[in-house]
Amino acid sequence: MKFRLLLALLVLPLGAQTTPFGTKVSAPAAAPATTPAPASAPATGGVSDEFVDNSVQVSPFRPTLLPEAKSTRTFQLSKLNRLGSTETTKELRRLYSAFATQSIVDGSPAGSSKAVGYLTTVTYSVLQDLGDNRYLAKAAWPAAGPNEALAAGVDTMALLLLEKPAKAGDTGNLTGMHVGTVAVLFTPDFAPLKGRRLTLRREAFVECATLEDSPAGLQRFVEAIVAGAELSVTTNETIPCKKCGGLGFTREAQKGQLLDKRVPCADCASTGKLIISVETKFVP
Ligand SMILES: [Zn+2]
Image (cartoon, rainbow, N blue to C red):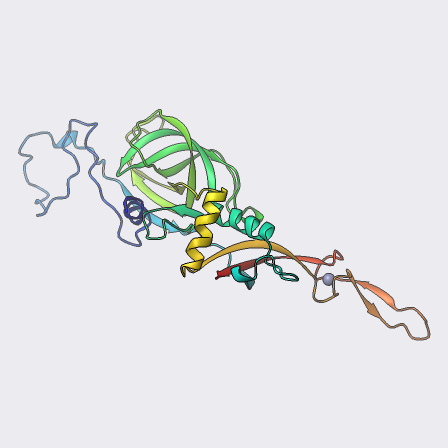
């Protein structure tokens, strides 16, 4: 539940989050005023020149787009290890391993949900607490997703939604789900940007836990499918090229010659194979 709430806070469309962030300054916090004060109103406390706008706004800038599977197929548990069926224990283990890395543990009835972004390991050093468990951090992460859909980050600023409170200077690493790029409007309290109100567009990650890739995890997965859970996994699969029938070339008849001319297949770059994204749906 907590996770879902935090995720909503981070990726809430349009409604930018304004949160007071007044713990580190003695000046009045940027609390939203219910009635706008006239511009010429005398400052009651006489400290108007001390006012620092420390409010933070995080708004989605570019969401993560997961690739759509080019093809779908079904994995039927009742056919497991039957002669001639593709549903083997080895294949089930392989698909479950992929499923585990694409799912995040949460408070849903099934105990987990499909990750809405690529999962990667983020190494970080917190630069600033932005409130609501959101942190600006110096971060690094390896590329993730097919064809490195999420490019690697090297010593770059990123926005992190952490599970536990942290403070500037804290370092660590976490499993992070990329939730796209966000625009962060805030006032940095670190050099050399200190005190300048600005907007940064940065990759955002939500700390999360993936499913356990273990025999016990696989057992729970199978039980969930038998109980009617609709689960699927998307993997890259190598299939024979349709155009050339897996040969890597097509034949072209040559007038007056016994042998056909072999034309390299452009679809598969003469490999005879194609790699496509396949969604496998599991059924009892
Ligand atoms: Zn081909």
